[in-house]
Length: 242
Image (tube, rainbow, N blue to C red):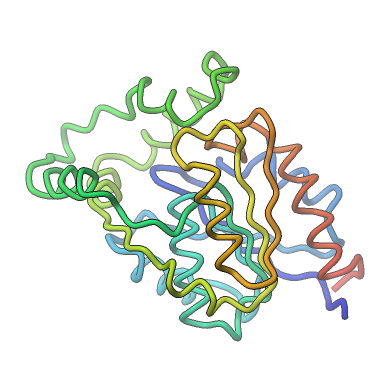
């Protein structure tokens, strides 16, 4: 049964702000179900997935669709488990249920111990390049990603770089709301089999792959993302005005 179009809460990823969603928001507003209300989660204040999820829930509407990108996908799944009655549906973009590797944990421990936020000089071009498909290496996307990092600054860089991601693979079966999983075909940060593992673990979920896109799907392929998400939302929530 279709229900009224929902509030949608957009959750960014590591060192990203609401500009991640600019084109996606505009496209979704144009072709998605009528009556959508879009909200942005703030991940810049907290140092753990759990506290990020708690802040999101405190600020969010009573019931909403949750769209989580990358690190935001970990936050989104924590929200669903914390308040399943409030989450109408879930969209997971370029994310994973895997835990940090030993090397990643060691690097995070080093950042937590020794990084001086006042010396933050921004996200390096080489690091940003690894997050996009080669076809987008010379585009304005690189500058936008770096600008988001600059706006967030050294304190957020320290907190988010040291943040520990644990696996929730054994709890994916607890997610019962409609779930859409979106992966980039050329994502070098999150393998396609990680998206498939989410799809296999979350009951009745749908998996879509965006051709030609790296990790930064909302920036690299916003039109493709809208074409995937909007019909899925209409199928679940219809086109009626709230």
